[in-house]
Length: 125
Image (cartoon, rainbow, N blue to C red):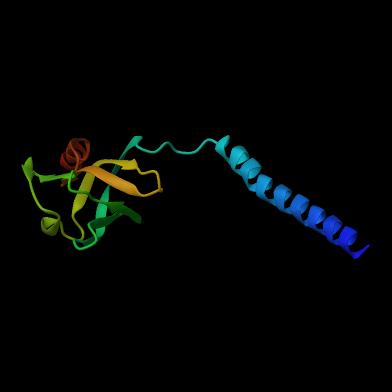
């Protein structure tokens, strides 16, 4: 009799374990149906630099942390510059993409107001 109750107990435990393992796959399948921002989709940014961290290769612009890579092109007045040349309070604009892990990665960073904003500055004078 004891052997039979042990087999029944093992059967119940294995059934529960099988259901428990199947449930996360079902949840993941449901989450994949939710539209999310696509990784590698280019987007633009602009604003004032709030922080520069050359060792971490990051800029904070408009409250957004932007990661830079060795492939990121940084320029000022049409000339290539280094991240160490970017200062807090500089106006910047550029393009970035969202990585698969949700980070914003810069493709280009241009120091100075955009051409569109330069026209507005002249109008204000």
